[in-house]
Image: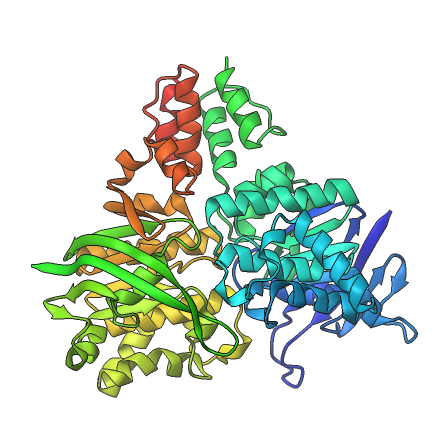
Length: 280
Length: 280
């Protein structure tokens, strides 16, 4: 069942300027429950603008967005409720931390949602435990490393029990090990709780590794949506979106060029390694 | 001529509580010795919190040594009368462009650095054009900075550095919000500056794929230099890198794994072409 349906939305930043371009131009797609969706596209293609629409932060000029079948622009729709169910973690979320201790910062969101102070703190500890940072709960967020701060910011969103988690470039600025841990973590949330994941990224090799659906944007329009291997091996789409192929795909084409057979649907690192070992 | 000379550098930070009293000290840089020659392209790697950014900030006297010396073209960063001259020598682009953009219009922002160097307006005009052109964002010259995307802001802040024509350019994760194509363009441009104008480049990066641009890779861990070698050599030391929180770049990683399976590869291949040589 689709949890989120975007239908023909249009948006522009300067609404008084007739000649200005649409930042989003007739965007439609649908996302199912438990999907792991990557939004890709070059800088300025409209990725961040798009996700800000998904929980009603920006309002589209035309078109509609359905959350679990209900139009979020209808008069009686509860937008506040949507923002708890559809949590966004922005670029560099560590700059959003403000409380004196980690646990206060995380509990803030839970209390906003209406939990009592006791419940909120209990729940916050559970979330910190889940993310493996319970030991930091009494630290000041400003003394933590970048990766730790990001986990704290993330805990602050996750504590609200969202059905959909949206990330804007979650891996920017994380070292490779922290980045892998982060992806493993959201993958496990996706598996265990069925949380729908939507994220923006520039790292296309990781898209192959984790996502089950890809949305490609260019100049505010959707170029194509589909499965990672379909999209990323489609030379026409990649050229149109001005994106460079991930390594796995470049290797795939090089192997084909040399006259070998190789399975297009198996491009995850271990799968590709296996294919390369057993090439005949 | 020696460009950068770092001798026995130690940097301690005070950790404050909410009343601004020092509760403890944290050692960010722990005895670093490093000399970088004019015209070198050095990549600094290390996990989050390893001291990379602190080291970068020591170069232009934003952070002063607790012990030891940092000498830039013969000028000690401890000598306050030289601070301005040192900053003329070193252009620095930080991780988060939002911390760096000062003006409301792109061209004014790029001009800001040059204005401080007392460059005449005709030259400024020319350099703004060149800098924007080289990053492929000429059309943004008169745009409002607050309405740019993350990646666009990052490019604008780098254009400001390029326009200053500093002898040394320090880039602290300059490409974290830019797509792979844009990253390649940017680094090609930086490499060109390095080769043609003999500008010293210090690149701090998490995209370890980018080390192939450098002549030399320095790996930091817990404020100490743990490795210092060429990119080709460094990727052959997988376990040492992993101890420092760094995973191998995609292609060298795949090459290493294939080598383990008896394929005829060295394990330090960097391009798809080099990797696929094992196929006849």
